[in-house]
Length: 178
Image 1 (spheres, rainbow, N blue to C red):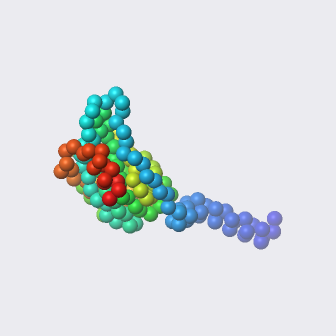
Image 2 (cartoon, rainbow, N blue to C red):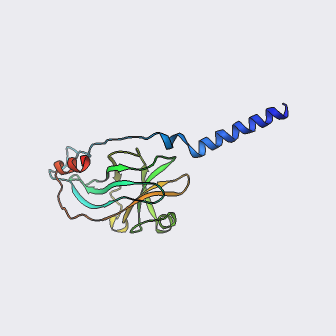
Image 3 (tube, rainbow, N blue to C red):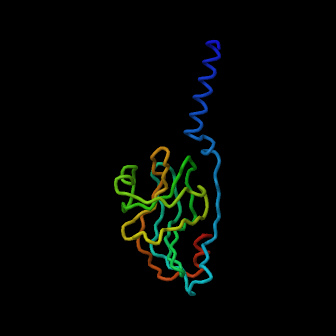
């Protein structure tokens, strides 16, 4: 192969690797979701979801807005619900419950400790994440949107005990729409 052929081949490999690492199309394409609040299982006792903790997102590396609320469901499950949520899209973005009371940088998240609730379902819209039943919520004080590939905190919501004890399905729907 000629020298020019090798240069073109190397340039193509560099572009492909760069595209894979940075996924630039994700900066332009938003992933919208609109999940309904999780329904209690048919075998559960009747009752309303209970808002346990909640907090508003603030920006860290990217503009991030919305409300994070952890609900206790009548059937014993717990769920993190993001409402009116919006942030940047990116590669390998995860939803973390963090042990820090707040995180305004990357180091705070990694040094304090966290548990991953899963990949972000979309960068815009209402969405739910299961919170493990055996997780001690007293140790987790924030929700962080984290880019795993680059180790970047997009935004964090410090959590505080919710003032409401019981939350009706009407209130859950209203929180999702407001």
